[in-house]
Image 1 (tube, one colour):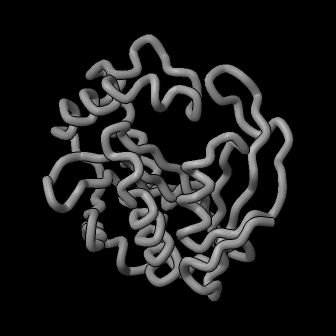
Image 2 (cartoon, rainbow, N blue to C red):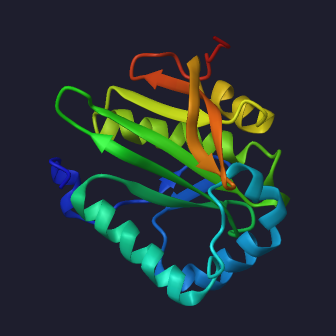
Length: 198
């Protein structure tokens, strides 16, 4: 459970210039499944292999339950990203693997619908979640991993102030194949938007 009094009340939305982030709700299903479905070919190369029931309502309910359980246990917070100008769902971002004590760290993962790519929405979302992690959760370090071929994700992380720290061999099973990943990280006192290649 999150130790801070903040988590005794509802999590507020995180607001930027281009996006608003809030926790996923049960009634987001239709918009989520439509966006994910139309973006499938765009997303699959960078995600764990999709299950046959990936977009079914039953799988959605289980996903929402897991989000709530992780939040209640203080191990993760999932946000949906909404484009401010249209109010439409654009993607998702999760701060997971949250650890306190001597680690005080978390890990960011994210996805964006194909039609929303290249607009700077994800860069702003990563910056908002980073600020939340450092200022509200008092984390010291945030990590993110991306496949070396994922140039878009690399740009997002570097624009958001993450620095490449190394290569993790055969790190995650993505689209059915164990893949190497670059490890990126931001420390609480790093200047925002000052990421550099390692």
